[in-house]
Image (cartoon, rainbow, N blue to C red; front, side):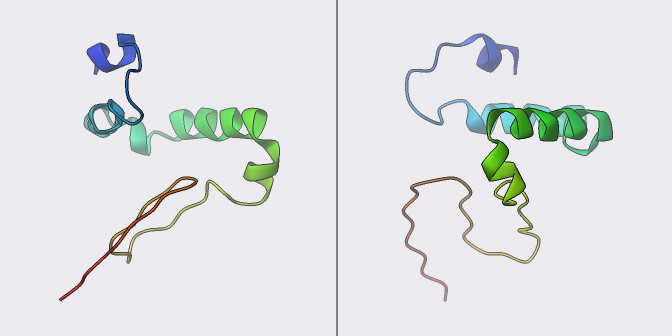
Length: 78
């Protein structure tokens, strides 16, 4: 995870999986202080999006999910 944090972004999303795995392994994804700080950061950097609920995602029963802006996806479920 340290490598991902210190790396320079060369292509969009390159380090997203590594960072996500590292945050999950460390327990940061369920730590209330970390989550509160992340919510506050979103409120400060995108107040309109935070107020509109843009960052409140419940994907617990979802299949083939993408989160973010300007995505494109094709799903085939059998």
